[in-house]
Length: 102
Image: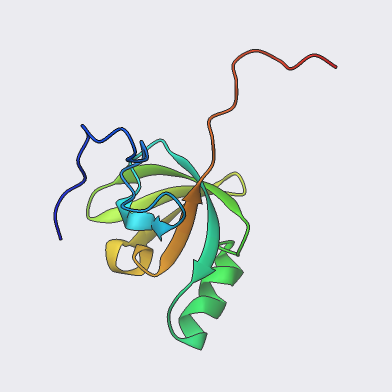
């Protein structure tokens, strides 16, 4: 697998190889994403859902080192990089800094 190409204008800014879905471990720190799919055993996916990693849940990746630290429902949770590979996410567009007129 080759690293993401930052010079490709079609490449999403979070480093995902596909604009639709990518694994959580491919997202850059600071990015906000929405969980779309949990892959893994029934036990693992059930535990992830208990922790707040549910489909359609918005999360923010805070740090990525040996472990992945995410903000989920105003709580910081750490998971392994291997577990993060089983969580498929889509990027959430950055909110505009200006409020939209009513």
